[in-house]
Image 1 (tube, rainbow, N blue to C red):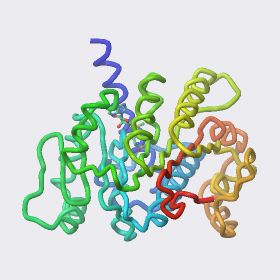
Image 2 (cartoon, protein in one colour):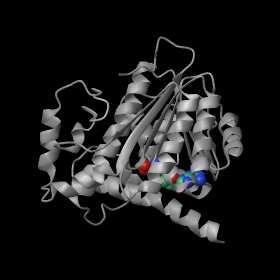
Image 3 (tube, rainbow, N blue to C red):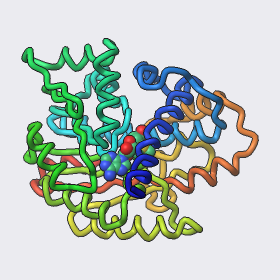
Length: 317
Ligand code: SAM
């Protein structure tokens, strides 16, 4: 059917993301020793603008995620919706920043591929076994469940089914919970994505929602803008705070967390000029304008809810 074909195209996007991330790491933008197990070869060259865009995306999401984990002292859960072949679980394990439990949800066919890679590559399976206390580890075609890492095959557009599966694998609605959607909501209708955000706001008393995707406030991507605004209104209805930045920066992408042109927020406290210089030296950019345009079309948003005021755990900035 048409729906099946459309869904197949959506599923293929997870390979694109992983291929681009793999290429950027091969150029030295950031380190990811695990991504090679999900994409065999480095693949064809990508433009420097693309690599810097992925750099900003990965650094931005990691920054907010790590801040949440540190604030909650890892006494929390993370749910990565539409995780694809993401390698964050292994990064957190290596950095001693593992939440109580790390959940991922994606279409069953993507999940079974990911599980197959995990089963057949010891560097991927070892950390999961190491953090698991009993002998029995659930591994079937569409689900992986261990003490600290759980991968679930489900359709994000069917929230009750997804919730049922998450609860079957010990989702704890009493724990502070971070929900991440990285380039995922754009594949759903506004009402479907709003429903997902509302579910987060209604299910957890203490939660943070991070969304990264293509969305510009004032240009031809107007449709995306409207959808984004609807989502944010919905977020505001259920949560305490909501902030959004586009990735546009004056000099380079790694500065986007330094200051938001809209809110004047100061998000990254150290002098990161060194980082900026290192990143800029990796590849020559002959058209800075192209990068600016690209970055303006992506935004990172986050919303928090802290009903119990647990020492204002989620008040980052
Ligand atoms: N978040 C990952 C990343 O940034 O590397 C993957 C991003 S990829 C562009 C989008 C992912 O969302 C794909 O893995 C796709 O299968 C998943 N996805 C989109 N719609 C979905 C749905 N309705 N149910 C489950 N997964 C979905």
